[in-house]
Image (cartoon, rainbow, N blue to C red; front, side, top):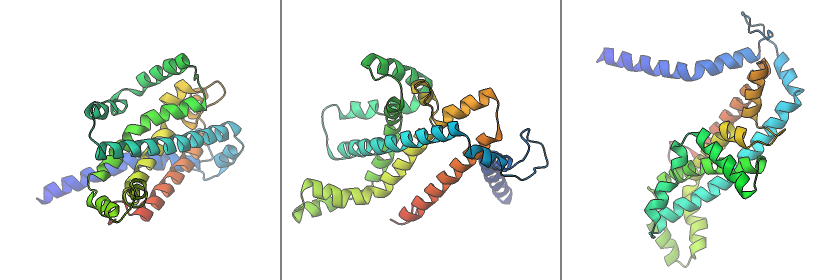
Length: 259
């Protein structure tokens, strides 16, 4: 038994190391004076100063955050409404809709990107930030429906019945009873959608207009031209902000704890 415990703990430690060691190495190298990653590390903020003067990365970061914010708002709103509709109503074609809404999760993004590019040109939308927002919404929507639907499965519908019996209208019941109870699931779904959009490279690459890029596309372009530690610096800042956001929201809504 002790041997099995030792195997289990070793396995978990290996998983954690596999996940976080590459990130720690990247963070450490972002403070390395050498552009050629020579060791030992000579600690410096040289690459953060270079990042502060890199207008291309600034513009790409702003575009990424804008696209991620808009697509998160739209996909969270639409996905929550879809999950509520699936939960509350039985209608003809419901099962077919439930099946059709999830394929974007499994279809390779390369195929989806190609299809969106062709379709957007066909309907006259073209390429640009607006097209990227639509593309990211299409990718994020299934994740939002899944997370909110999982939260709805444990919802006690008698709370809505009690609210209506006390005179609350349909919308009052939704806004003051259902939505507050669903809020941890909605926040989790929004974080998921934000992460999917912020990290999305393939769709952004296909739908980006000339001269307009997002951070993943700009990093890919910079790597092709010659990798510099500025990429490590901007990646470190994005990871730090993402972790702070996740920790803050987790403490606010007590994910994994009591509601």
